[in-house]
Amino acid sequence: MPYDFSLSSGVTANGRTVHYAKLNGSIQPKFVVGNRTVWEGNFGLYNTQLTPGLLYSPADFVSGSGFWAYFIFPTAMAESKGSYLCLNTYDKAKFTFSFMQYGAHVPNGDFVKFFRKLLAQPNAGEYFPKLLLKDSHIFYRNDNGILSQLESVTSTQALMDYLNPSSAEIENQELISSARMVHWASNDAAHRKIQVETAIQHFKNNMVEYDKRFTLHGVPAKVCQIICDIRHQGRGMNDRIANALNTGGNYDQAFSNLCTIGAANYSQRITTVRNTINKLLADGTFNKKYDRVTNSFVDF
Image (cartoon, rainbow, N blue to C red; front, side, top):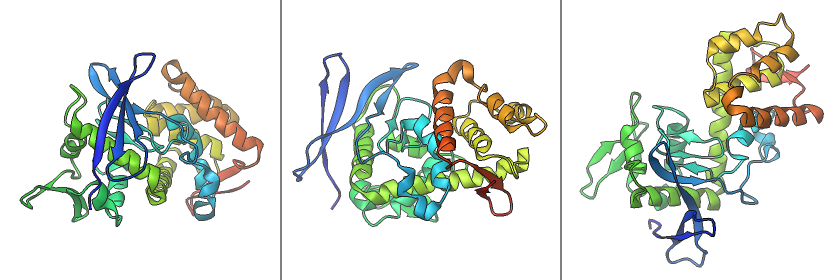
């Protein structure tokens, strides 16, 4: 049976509107879906709560993913401090979710791949009963059984509109979609595992492409990671990265150069990434270099 949620809201002492949901027919307490916000004229939700037990820890995944579990960690800390419940519905993506903030606006992008995997899970019908996979794409089935495709290799507009109909206000559909995703991530380890698997595969694929562009064989993990973070956030283009790497093999200087890209607007994020990398270097975890042949990181 599909899950049914009751929605409510309240106003905190500082005037912030918080939206809640409760799973009907359950003894579970109500939970936070997100806070109301407005950004550049768009109304939406954000959820940045840090809930013990629902935060990404590389140690939980190293047995299956090896060093990659640590390689994505600096970006995870910058994106959400590792929160599996991280949500925003107010920017151009219209719906962004996960500890790595997958955005629904990119055709065949990380959110789409992530959501497809979720819809293949046996409990997907409990959360999104009107969505299904057909020919490896996401479809909506209306009450008459008619299917309509929500995403393709060229557009995700219909999927974005399904999850969040507009940015003019916070609608019931937006709240329900968000509540479903927050509850699913909170209560199902498989959901959280898919978040992580999607991130690791995304960074693996990206390293192959970045190696072709920047020749990263033998380059320290710290340099590779900051490149991945720059491109994941989109704060710098390839030419700027190439210039930062042009140090004659001085990778400490290259790392410092890369940390200046986007610093005018994103200094806090860069500091988080750099500090996380430095901690991993200090304990020996990040003392590795990229190996092109195996698309992996190996000891120096």
